[in-house]
Image (cartoon, rainbow, N blue to C red; front, side, top):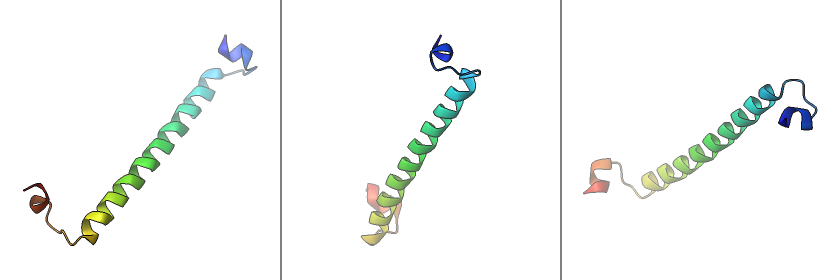
Length: 54
């Protein structure tokens, strides 16, 4: 039904591509957050993860 309303021959391929793109964007955002937190950690001079949690 959705495929007919969008006039697509292969609606499943469209949704797979759309979900893949969404996962790519989410992973890119998470990597950016991780990079920002890591740079803050090392900018403070903390080189020991054990020291951070104690």
